[in-house]
Length: 79
Image (cartoon, one colour):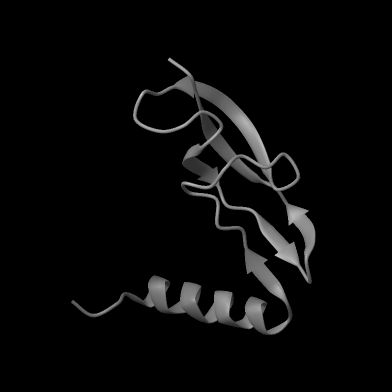
């Protein structure tokens, strides 16, 4: 299927932001880092190690290595 107009606009917007130095924080599956992530919920999980990001609720961004907005995440804890 061809991408919709909304998807094309989103890709162009992200490409423009990357040109000026804005980067998305890759949080999914990463170890929780309080400098980049804001934990909303700690959820028990036997499948992954404690303090691992289970789900990204809101994406975070940096500008030239400085935090613009922390990624809001759900983090695992020991069962």
